[in-house]
Length: 350
Image (cartoon, rainbow, N blue to C red; front, side, top):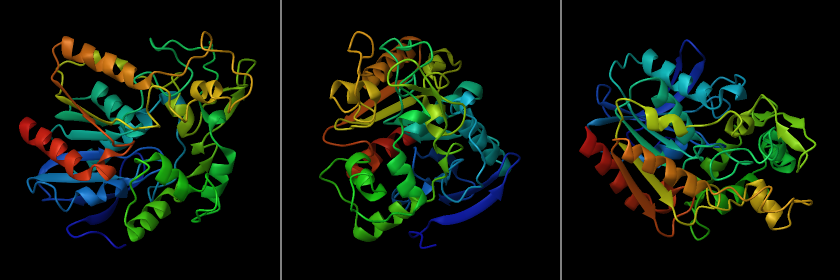
């Protein structure tokens, strides 16, 4: 494994599963656990580690269903609590006995919130997190467009994209090739990683478990548009608002300091996400859209802003950084700016 300078790779058996993870910094440094997003691995944080403050120990695991961690099914009915509990089990296996700092990107944002709702943490950093009311099929206040949460979950994933992952497609021949999806969605369209790094990250995506127990997950037929509702297995079902909610973060006591960073050009987590059924229906890409009164595009960023404003009003410390021109992964396309904000936040807390 060709790791960047100062980065180390490990595999640890916890009381839940066997976890692959990378780290940097001193073994007894202040622990910071970095949770990646959907269709990624811990190595999506690796480029940040060589320049990180030396007093922190950065730990980036491959989460259940991804990378080189043991392939164990995702119970979607727990939302992202499988991920949260897996992260906690790794922390315990490493004999870390103090509250950790947590940072979660996209799907990882819901996981770190779930972790913090169940146990004390030192701080929370959200990086373009999934909405506090899950992904797809919900209105501004988090209530579902349909009672069965139709329009979210495993049935909304692209079968072609999943097949290309399973077939280890490294090409750029189709808009749905993993390489092209990464370059069009993970960061701003005018950003490209160096060729060798791009190849490495594509290889990481191709380690994703596909099918009912991974990406996209199973689904339930629905009489409601667009004809599918969440199943109970796999990552997209875990992200459905039927199971995924972190709005109760407002009630945490004591409240850890929170940093929310977000790319202004994010098309994945957005008010009108290009990956969400309401937006796709409105644009005519999914036939039969019942209209904005029935199934509006989900205002994801607005939902995040509202919930975190409530957190602040309830006595929490909350900082926001909207990175102009950045996409879904500001730690890539605005790496220097984002790192300065993130590391400065950690220094101010600990």
